[in-house]
Image 1 (cartoon, one colour):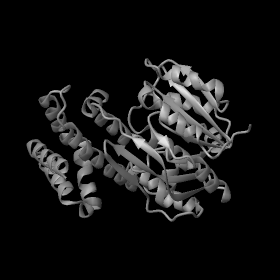
Image 2: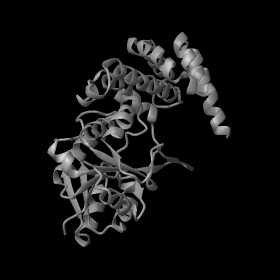
Image 3: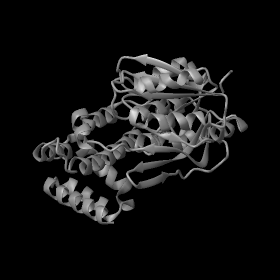
Length: 345
């Protein structure tokens, strides 16, 4: 079988949700798929679950490696992929049975380099569908990618995910596009920037076939241990691919990156002030205080306000004003209020 789509699934300690993920993949109505599972040094029964199924399913492949992180696992899968297009699925998520047939047919009918679809996020009992304000079901050309899509990757992270997209494998392999290694934040966004810097066409379909499960855990502990804010600063300071200098002036690149840094900072403030038994309150408080005093944040603040302040809701405006005034205790009060309000709703 010559696969039309190669689907890469990095696996690390995913035994709790892995079987539903596998079952949803094996139900794909697009028969010409290969499913490349990269076991990234799992210490649970993830490997054994896959090995029990593989003998009866020739479309599945398993690669075992020592733990190196999700980027390395995906890169190993890319090297192994033989399909015309490449897709990604996380091991604790599921997909609709027609997910990859819908995306593949959308791609080949207009010979598109990529297809973007919606996805559903699930956290506990809450489900939210992410959609995009793009023209639907038409081939969008290079001008759209350069004028609309690439700037969004600099300014926001709402397009970052790779698992609601299908990518032409030839572009990935001929240009050596891989996920950045040893990066715990923004690896999907960096991959997308590199890919769409080379892509000439794309399509958006209003279809929700991917179900993302946000696994409950110690989010605050993770962001402090990984120091996501420091990594957000590193992303802020990175030079984007050369194509950006061809499509916009340097000051606009800086403005878009500043908008993203402030948006990330606002998000982290809420996360850090969320109660967590594994991280002391004062450690989280001091982290937020250092974050809002950071020189890059202070520099980005007026740019963010000029571009986005008028579009913010009352809560976000309050947070921005408290960051301006460096009122950490005020931020604590505001995030506590909004958390209890959301809980009551």
